[in-house]
Image 1 (cartoon, rainbow, N blue to C red):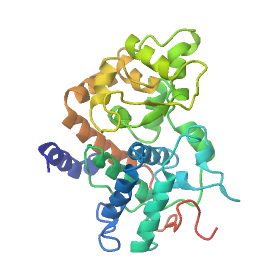
Image 2: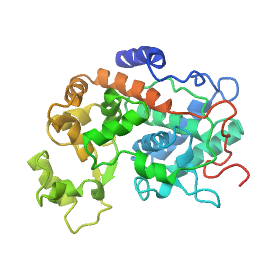
Image 3: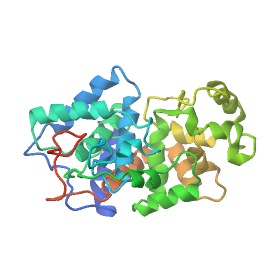
Image 4: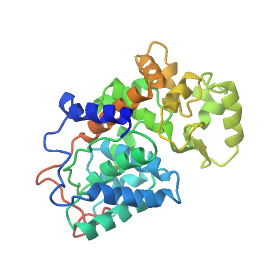
Amino acid sequence: MSPHLILVVTALVMAPLLRGSNGQLNATFYAGTCPNVSSIVQGVIQTALQSDTRIAASLVRLHFHDCFVDGCDGSLLLDNSSSIVTEKDAPPNVNSTRGFDVVDNIKTALESACPGVVSCADILAIAAEASVSLSGGPTWNVLLGRRDSTTANNAGASSALPAPSEGLTNITAKFAAVGLNITDVVALSGAHTFGRAQCRTFITRLYNFSGTGNPDPSVNTTYLATLQQTCPQSGNLSTLANLDPTTPDTFDSNYFTNLQSNTGLLQSDQELFSTSGSATIAIVNSFASNQTTFFQSFAASMINMGNISPLTGTSGEIRTDCKKVNGS
């Protein structure tokens, strides 16, 4: 294990004791019932990465979009049914969230190895850690023991999830509403160090920022020209751009050095550094100058996020198919 990961792991042993820990979740929850759960999840993701370099970032995003809506309960994975209005069709998710097929493949593999044991909510948490680790980022002890919801919250998904064009005040408020602080905001935003975003999520920054008819003045002018080529005004809004133009498939601290040079892709990214007087600026500078510090904070914030209102004990269920409630 490299020195910086030893530091990360050491810090994370203490992280759940510091804030937001749910005592019913623990890192050894499946030690006796499905001891190979982490290696099974990682194996499926490694296979998926061979044909889809975006999948790691997409799986991290699924965990995030699940946890912010009524907690980390796997509700995002449910399809429409007679009793479910899926969160997948909410504006922040429709034609945007992806990787559900890989989650299904993970569930199939786990049902073969240890049927009826591992929840879909825990699959998302384990998959997020594996995706970060496989992409060069930190590793951490994922706390487990979540159970799956039997309901979804489409309206909640529409309102609770931070939007890429939102200002820092609104985003900070949405994080605070689920018990996450300003360091969590910056650290978890660092997940945009890999993955892609559609032109529709940032095109107003290029041509008509805040209704001015002009580009967002915080965008680096050279970067602006590049993005305007990728996303012309009359172009396909589904065209993808790298969230990190330097190392788009690697989990590193370049996201923060990009913000320092005004090359953050989304408004919600760049505002972390460009909002005058914000406490986020010092955190961005800290993470930009020390990748180990970022890795430690990111891992701790992922544990904090994973602790948002989990279903435990006899609440919820262990779905046998992540797409539907048992018996439906």
